[in-house]
Image (cartoon, rainbow, N blue to C red; front, side):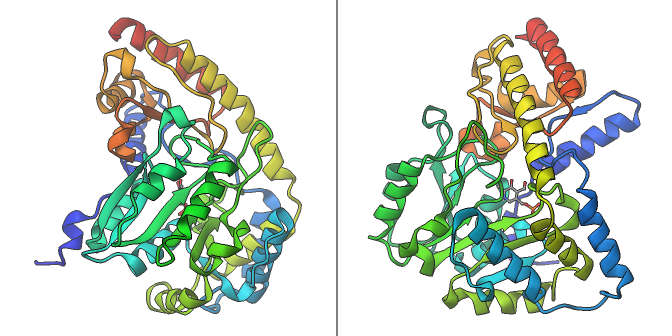
Length: 390
Ligand code: PLP
């Protein structure tokens, strides 16, 4: 059957294929350590789970407004004010079924043949996949190790053309764990004044996952771009809620009604009990967020020290998210065959850098959302493998 050309171009996220393969190997009785998938290994905090159960018991079984229940949209605005002093009108907030749905909506809104969309490379693979789906030209913005895996404002601005409709930025970033310094963000925003027709999608889903005293720089802080800024955020990472399928975004006045209509057409609303859980996440105690982060920080050090001790491997210390992106170019292996051999032969699941873009060659991604014990075991296995096969 003939479908639209977009479906011949749409990609996917190899982390899910690695997760499936790791599951198969585990089912065959192999001992698999999964450093592949990007999701917290902690359970959702119990107060949040209870709020969903209570919502179901209270009869919250029906459709909600397509944009989300009003108290949740207000809580999102209040949370952004509490954390960043940002002024956000709840009427510009939409609750969506996962952070991915915001990128899907924004890319769909601006992508078409003849348009350029800039996105980070290495970056979250769905950016490029969705850009290609729409027929727009994907323009990679290089994310370089020598810049601490942050973006360069100058390089980003140099890639803007008269066809550029949307610029996607992501800090703290997947897959490299990079955090772009404020000075660089300032420079980017200043430069964007020359391109008033370029919309900006800022993916800030890891905004609470920062280490070494780093403070998050939100693009909400720049009034001069607020009329063309789409902010992507959500609960998946911060509150260990990946499977709840929850996210939110803030849209400028001129775009909000379009995304509201898309919601009405595509998903009607986010499931009601999940929205009550999200409300509890934002308004209840925040201790679990700090506790998870402290644990991630311990593992971050463990993984970086361990990686730097492996033959042919070097790894800069990531400042955000929960990923390490070691340079493996001196091991004698290409990244994807190395990731595959580590899984098949050593039972260690990682993701090859090229799954995040052309510039990912020479790197692999390890998610340290796994126990310190498992991380140590994985590093031992990698050491054994590279000592024999380097
Ligand atoms: N943005 C980035 C940078 C991510 O890494 C992810 C998930 O890995 C998402 C968005 C999507 O999050 P969600 O699971 O809420 O759809």
